[in-house]
Length: 307
Image (cartoon, rainbow, N blue to C red):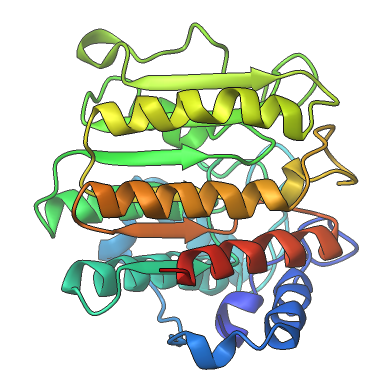
């Protein structure tokens, strides 16, 4: 949490506005969660950090665009503004810092609210996501901490295409991604047949749901996702818990209650404990109804705090 990652958002009434962090923080404070957690002040990721996942050409493009303060960083969804590079790098820095604390053993679980920017590819921004902190964390856990098998679980309404396609041929990156069908929602990917390529076939599980799917449909497929992840015995769990899958989001068509986000976090916490390491990093992801994201994300925090 903190003012530095709160700056990641786009002006002019953009759905991903900079007020999203404040909505979460107010609910966090109302539920009196601050005394129960360690609050970290985010640090800005270095260029070296960003290059763990992204190409140098992309990093330098964002730097130039940030200095100019105008234009767009992708096809039109992700506008540039002065300081966008620093704001995006702080999101990556916050996620990296949380992962490092978990690996150091001082904390087993962590949550980063304005994070989980799962659409950015290695070489480009996409879908409100300038840099992909999920991908950077995965690469850092491997190269800097020596982990091999990592699981990425995504319950955002949008398919986590930036993560999937970056690792689709990697058998040690386990993916379980529940999202709205490609037929009705951006980015139009995440079909059931997309299960990985080459040696990684079978390590990725895409679970598209039809528009209007709610808690009953979540309850039907969530155990399959847990079984898929557990089968590979990953050494670290990453949960992208985008709140745009909660009913009433202005951009999506799923109808979950916030309780599903808390359930996902609780079940993954229990799985990590059964696996013997307890490591869970939850990343906020999308969510464009402010009340929804506040309810879903604080529910995730409370679930991670439980013993």
